[in-house]
Image (tube, rainbow over all chains, first blue to last red; front, side, top):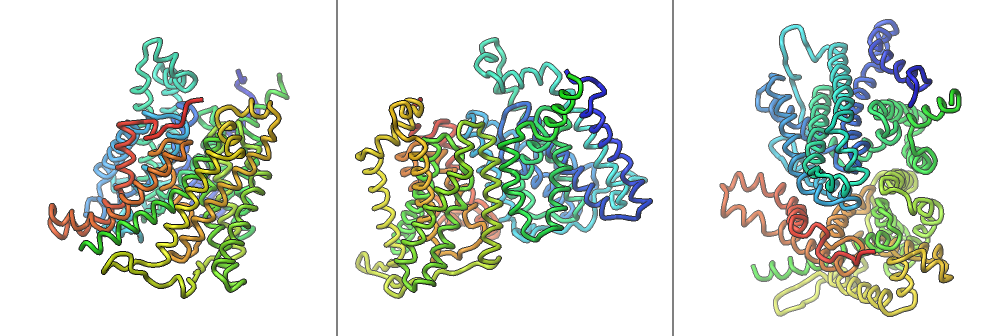
Length: 318
Length: 306
């Protein structure tokens, strides 16, 4: 067990406090760009946290997680296009549509395991991509501009950058708490047990397929929420937000941060997106650095950043 | 109508055979090395780029294509020695991430070397004609030659895997790699050769497709996912399954795109049909995959269990 005051825990608390205080820093320094960047980080961090629920705890290697980003985003975009701006309609629809898609995909793909599962989730997500790209009424390949953000009750105004940032942050923290409670519940233990040894779990009487499917649907729904936030953040949705490389990005965030803990993916999202920002500042061809870097992480840093931090602690105070 | 139908059937056959070349490499590498290779599509892309450049350089399509094939084989073997070798025996998630990193690397490398615009690979005049295959039915000579070359390669693969000593080692390596190594076979070299072979097959598919489509960055990614669908339908690790599934997917996709909109117009109002058709016809192969999964989760021809 890691102690309460390990290096890792202090750094993670620092990160969270930093995220809360970020708008104050922006106000003082006047650097609006940081707020824009971190709003994106927080939103994609939410998606990564949701992916970690199935990838890290469930052992379900979904390569189609970005599909829910697109579905959540398009639910908001299409409703706005049709003149329905209320967030009380848009967001539940976004969540329900993602949940439904996750249920269909999950029901089919959870019949298989391992490589099949990777390829099937990838293929279905790509199918969703082509379907969305074929929606001529809603912009097709070119995407859809959203002219009005989701509207809630009076003081809450999503067009206000600071308010919107705090909404995203609150939802992120809420999701982290939800995932934390889930994985430590009886439900979460069954899902983790099924990751380790599905046969044994079934032998002692758990219908693991159902547990895994529910877990898959919860993760998809949370990611759909992230999609609804992206749509509001960029005022624009396009099929490219659900392209399969985006699913790859999400997996990178989870693995880079560390799959072993609930907050790991958030650390990964911060690290990945900041790295992307820094590298793309150095050279236009930044992916030529990122690609091999990724290979090195896979080869030499399996536990991700979170794993490295925990190791530091183990060395400092064994 | 019949002419169009025959033509589309041939297109389906041609597309299916091309997909087979890609899926065969994928399934070969998976069956023998237990490696999920997302970068397979990058090798397809590289094959096409090499062919476009080398054809322009040598001035001969056939010579350029042959040189490109050799180059892709060498690139594939280099990738195996530098990167893939370290991934064997690891978790599949590691394979996915590592090879995803390779995709980013190759896409950017190609952008750096050849620039962001696509290339085109013009056909020589002797291939850029059409031949009469049946009375009254004309068909592109180039597409016909793709069919012939792919069938020849499929036959070559069959003989190589089932009738030669190397093929015997490949099959033995697929069923028990430790034992093959213990019997004194240089398993490392064998793996490098198999990976190179897979790369050359992908490169061949890429360079043959190049004159039909433009040569561009990311061309390998869409077709890679179709190759995944094929391996899932055919059963992972099975070359025979890949062959049949590739033909099935080739026909369904081509005929679906050609005739599905017309069928839809019979059922739905013309406006709705016109809107829904492109989205629905691109869904067909995934629906096919879903149906196969419901009926046979292991694919149509699952490889023999280890």
